[in-house]
Length: 450
Image (tube, rainbow, N blue to C red; front, side, top):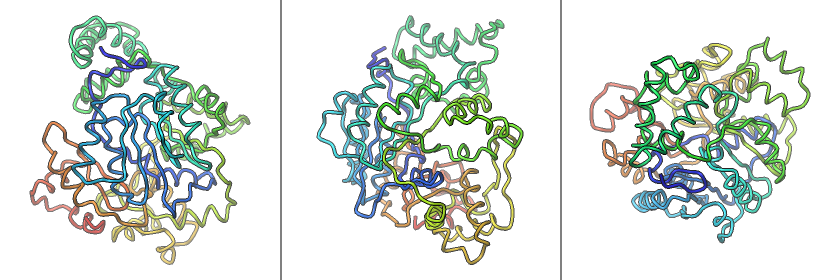
């Protein structure tokens, strides 16, 4: 296997879009905790470290024409794809650079209001992590936000044997990373079938057996085959970022900003007895068996008072993520089912069925206290999400994305003019392919101007 910084580079990563790194989503997280997000009236800058094949950066650039976007990745094949995608869709406000983080720090780049790194930090070795932090330290603008996702302990404890075996067995097999993983996985399957104790509690083994279609080769190679792979505890990550003056703001996994909904009252009472915020977060990760953290950090952000925080949240624009009839009003949490089917929540969904709008625009229909609480709850269930108040032209981009469906470079997402994109499910795929599904999706897309 060809590696760079402990990272396998002979198999490209999967093609996909990460909505939680969009500016509106990150602004929402900052506001949840009373921090002022970056000012964007005069434009803004955004950078993706380890941008993969550039899908997220390209889509966000297309849907935020007032921003300047950069994608940086050490794999030239990733950058080549990213540039082809941007060129095909006529996206002129995104630049892609093929460079490792050490070299990237020396590029002539602006200060960034947003720096994101999804699926990178615990997949590379410590020198590469240090270079990533040095880049952030040098290029983060005052008041900027940083998003870092990473494999977390203790949730990965049951899969440490699987990862080590996959890595070591694969290193001895022939072929590229995908062939090596497949060879290693076959041996691991046999070991598990023979009741090898260390593999009996493996989460990923169960997932691969029950949902193999959810785990393409590009994901498996980039998840398990890196020599630099290391799941980390939250306290270790926070200490490392504290050294460059960053403090934790909140979680881009929106549910994790609300301990009552996440934990339930009994476990919350136990955690609330811990005064130190970092220790409290560590214990909470043990309570929920945290496996993946999506943390937002900041440096020099202003703190808002409660009145201003509430006003800002009410002024934010939100959008449905699916047709009104398909809204679930619930989700699964470590504390059980979180259900928000009530008068206020259904009124919010009904109002947003006509298209994205600020909460303040529908305040007359719902009591103020119920409006904000239920909007935040609907964000955690994934039924609505924070988006931009403006609309960008996305017809050309969606034409390019649609033309790839069913092909070797399929990107199964649909860009929305309000600054985000949605995964294409079976029904929506049929609709885009010209089939008359008799669904509510045409009206939903029309409400978004698509």
